[in-house]
Length: 142
Image (cartoon, rainbow, N blue to C red; front, side, top):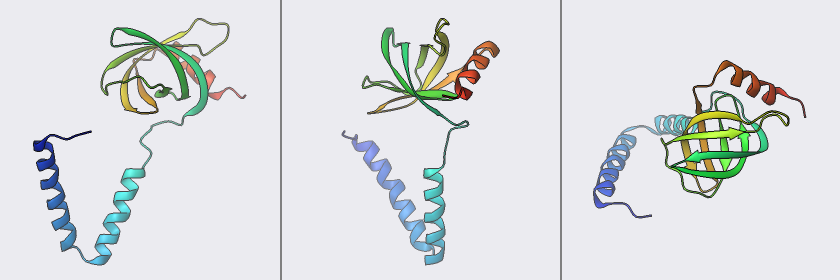
């Protein structure tokens, strides 16, 4: 992946400024900064715990229909295992089969992250009935 010249120049300005600031710190302050940056980068950003699963999902994204698998799910979102490209911020509509005898539950969401393993979805506008159904699924003992 190549970066444009303007992005490289902008990045170099920030790196230079950060480097100069770090050099003004004493060794103890540098250790403190490093420790806190590591905590910030490794902090869990999810609001609720995920349940590991393998649920077939049909979803509508970018005017196309796809079929893949959800590999983890929570009250706030899910992660779909896929190699198809997705754009962060795009809206998505998912049909998820949470119960064997029910029709699929329809969730509206937004692409929150995308990588080579799949796409993270943040749910939007969940009705109370849908939230109850999702809650039953999440807390069901296997």
